[in-house]
Length: 173
Image: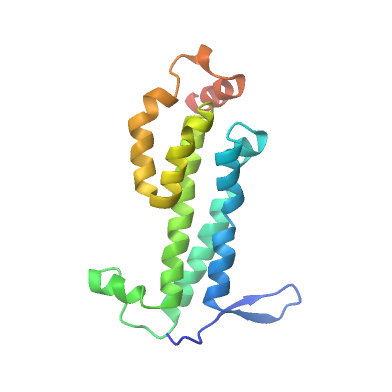
């Protein structure tokens, strides 16, 4: 795909507008930051719980990902495919393919963090190192949480906050 390739989208006026890959990258990088910052700086706040219970941020990132994959596969094909390492590497030779891969990471790392926040709603700031690891190195954060889970998630319901007890009760039924 040429370096001049653009992603077209419909603006509110019904006109098609072009976006450069660098602009899309900047926008999608900023989208999850309020969620990460809330979970790191105010993990027990109402807003943190709201983000942990919501699905719309992931639906939005997934829709961007699907759009980017469509742009990647409908452009001039550099021989990219999912059937071999060389094919996957060719997908990442495209700016749009690399951007799609990046949005994939953003979406799924944030989704893993959502699961962590829902599993340990009372862990508070003790989750910060795990969340930072999840943000920066996704699967490492997941492994850290699985390893530390028994210290972060009380099994005795009397040790849980009322909100955590209600959430656990709803999830268990």
